[in-house]
Image 1 (cartoon, helix red, strand yellow):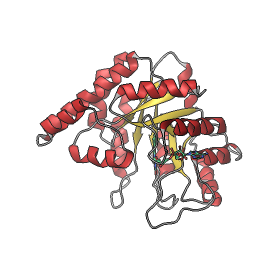
Image 2 (tube, helix red, strand yellow):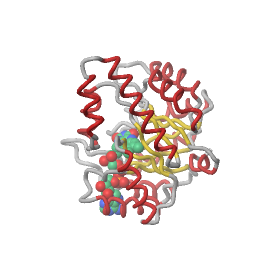
Image 3 (cartoon, rainbow, N blue to C red):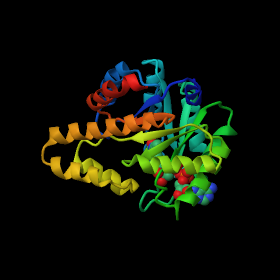
Image 4 (spheres, rainbow, N blue to C red):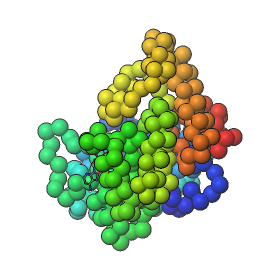
Length: 287
Ligand code: FAD
């Protein structure tokens, strides 16, 4: 089933993101995580793709296939393009198709320091066009940035580029993480004015330790409201309190987002079923 079809129901979509195990960790670790996440019956689970673009480095296809075929949950495979050739992308599409994966989150990906990008794709929109022109009928999603993408000169340019991505065939968008809902509402309004009419899911990352958030924020540039930074300073040396405060913050964000009628919530689970369960238990009846 295509992810975009989920949004025709009278229900807020609730989805998860997981990542393949890091190098040297056995593949079984992700199946332990999925064994627990499956009980929460998310509407779909997406699986990230390594930035290198190398098929050999990527377990994404295998995991996305297992989510669908072993756990019976709709899956989406992330796919980056800037470090891949058209031949390499074609091979990934073929593998996803023969393994029954029906949805792709099409991404440009990040540039790897000291590694020149390949020349075949410059933007996610080009990957989307390439997938649309292929022999396969994947549901296609794209990424969006409530505070603007870091490479973009300003938010308006970024939203104009987002429109190109949707015009190319993205049927659904998932947002970068954010901690200030007002920024997301402002972004949503601008996208609708720009004529972007596909469902947009809000990306929520529960913060459970200070190091994790410092790393994420340096990568994506999300701004931190003062109530959030106060929470981090107060609990940074008390891991359990920090985790509980992070869960409570995410739950508050989600309650407010659902009350505002957002299309969906995409939870960056960080492969942590305990945290996903606590959040699920707090918001399930609101969906
Ligand atoms: P694009 O849509 O190509 O945008 C990148 C920049 O180019 C933006 O500044 C945009 O404004 C500009 N741009 C876009 N189109 C045009 C155009 N036609 N002309 C001029 N400028 C243009 N990375 C991974 O490596 N693996 C993952 O699994 C992964 N999953 C992600 C999931 C989500 C939900 C999100 C939000 C991000 C994810 N990323 C992942 C990170 C992503 O790869 C980076 O943010 C990357 O820098 C941009 O990818 P994009 O698809 O948004 O790029």
